[in-house]
Length: 109
Image (tube, helix red, strand yellow):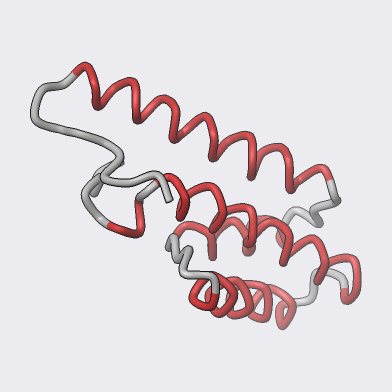
């Protein structure tokens, strides 16, 4: 992670934010399809939900967009969104502990 000190890059934000983006896009695709306005609605809804849950993670909007573009189904929530986010956090924790002076995470919750 390029900005490991950022509150937006902490594990809670990465995992929950990306999962919210995936869940949002899957629900909207299921209800409305993949029209361009659904893409915009998925991104906007993801941003608002992550703000309300205090789990803002900017790439979560991209997760929602990619989900609509790929006509995501329910599996998208678990792989790649949730599983990928957990792997990203774990790899970052391992790498950061190998490099002196780059502690990550600043906090888990």
